[in-house]
Each structure stands twice: as structure tokens, then as C-alpha cells.
Length: 438
Image (cartoon, rainbow, N blue to C red; front, side, top):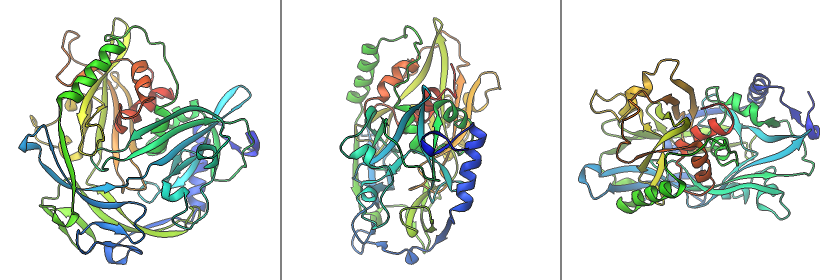
């Protein structure tokens, strides 16, 4: 079906999913694990052991040493992605017949399960859109970084994964245009409702689209919160003021407990994740073939909100988290956020509330989907995302480091940088798109 502006318009989520599968089949995509020595233009620096690109652009894999609150038990040495440039994640919006549509892209990323997922209109690092790769120009970038842009609906710097990146931020943007947009087979206009239905599908809407949607100016009129906005911000400021994070980049080759073989960098105890190399072919990308390193987690993680009504008003239980790569020490995460290792730890050693969210019966389980993380940097990184009604007695006090906040309060915070972490923003995207209704 030909749709608005001459582009292809979605009839519904099944139609969009079929289109994405069609683009995946037509794209000539392949991703193959290779030894590090077979990467083109990548290598380990002879002095530091850091994994770097010959150009000095793009990103590097270096080491990180961190300790929280001066507690020796939190001392951690690990690889981390260092990418100091700020990328653009931009959704272009346009109204057709009184309904706002968003231009999504069926985009291939080497680490995506299923290879192609729905990305924002623009998903590009600065190296990409300044064409450091000498490839084709990034389509539609002029709507987000050039003069004469349309009406800006959202524009905010947001963090990426605090355990895998060091001080990484992206510019999350929604821009509404009234100009004609050149149609292309890899792009499609969809409504917010269709995006919400697709948020219920596993591994369909990519991380970058989810984080932009979390910043959308959607408000719920949910009612009077348990804690006023001033009280919430004061509590959050107190959390930041009371926690310390000492994190410094160190040479990758000096990390204790990490070992390098011909095709992976891994922890001696097989903990955390691996660093691996892949060779990629993708006719539909700005560059048709390349190789690069990826971080490969050992299994899916869990991100979950507990929810309850307080005086009839829905609330979500946020957790003030310290992660070694955060720029501002503390950001608000979901109630539960853990790796596969933490989720499979012996009883008594698991994160608080984990068993409650994983064992929730269908009634209290309000949202469940498996979403993958940033496929440009992580290989098959998956997260089980859930929202569960709080099974505890209503008189149960808020645990240390946790606070009840309304959806409206969290949407307001998402319009400012470095308040909500990427896992919380994924779950908030389920709310802003209507996939989750409290």
C-alpha cells in the first residue's frame, strides 16, 4: 500500500513486521564471528592493549577500574566501550489526516537478533554522519542537525548502558516537519499506536527507538503523586550527593582476571561478558562491508518495574543506581535490573524483588517482552522487560534507595538528561506508546 507522502504506510503491527522481514531478506545481510587478527583496520594497541580503529575515530574498547562508595567489595575491573562523541537518535514526525506519524527505519545492526529491527529515522554516531567511514550520506540527517529544521518536540542528551559504556551520551530528538519527505523502501510512516503494539513483540523495536519514545511529550493526567515533584527531585539529589563513584579508564591489556585468545577477550571465571570480533556485509547500509568488535553478554538480563496504586493513582518504584560508566554517578533505574549471572545466583544472593517479578502470575504481570540492546555495539544482548503489580502489603515502606513516582513524573524527568537510565527508558517507552496501561 502506498501511504502518506508517497511512502509506505503501515496498516498495523503485522504489516510493519512483514515489511521489516521483507527488508531483512532483501538486504544481503551477513554477520560472521572472526578472529581479532582478521578485522580490517582494527587492532590491539602495542602499549595499552586497547582495541582501537586505525583512524582513531569510531570507538575503542579500553579498560575501566571502578569502586563505589570506597567499598573494596565493589572494586571492579572490566573492558568498557569508550566513544566520546555524541550521536544522534532522531525520530521524524509528521501529521497525516490529523494523526501524528513517525518515520521509522528497517535497519540492520550486526548485533541484532534477527539482524533487522525498527530504528529511529536517524541513528548515527558523529563519525557516521560526518562520513568518517567514507560511505553514503546518512539519510534524513538534515532534519536533525541542519538549518531550517521543523518543530522540535523533544531534544535531550541521554546516557547509554552504564555498565558497558564510559560516559556515553546520545542526543535523543523528535522533530515534526511539514515538508515533503522523499520516500525510500527502508523507511515507513507509523502511528504511535502501531509502535505501541510492536513494543509488545520480542526483539522488534530497537533500543534507540525505545529511548527516543521515552522522551516523547506524552502525559497521562494520572493524579496526585505520593511525593511531590520537589520531594522527588530532593530525594534524587540526596542520592547523588550521598554516593561516590571512583571510575578511571585503564589499559585494556592490564585488566586483572581477563584473558585474550585469538577470537575473544573473556574473564578467567567466565563472568560478565566477552569481547569478540565480527565481519559484516550489508548492502543497505552506508558502507556495504566492514568488521568491528562487539561486547557479547553471556545471557539475557532482567529489567522490571513494580507498580501499585496509591490513593487510586498509579506509581512505579524507581531505584537510584550507581553504574561505573555514568557521567553523574546516579541515575534512576527500574525496580529490578540485573544480569543473567545475578538472576541465576543462589537464593538469598539475588537482587531484591527479582523472585517476585519472575514468578508473577498472569494477572499481576502487566507487561512482558524481550528487547535487545544496542546492536551496533553488543552481540545478541537481550533483556527480559516486565512490569508487575507489587505483591507486598500496601503498608510496606519504600526500601532504601527506592521511591514511588507516577508515570507523569518519570516522563517529565525523561525530558531532561541523565535522570532515567536506558533500562528505565525502555519500560517508559511501553507507557508512552500505550503498550502498557496502568
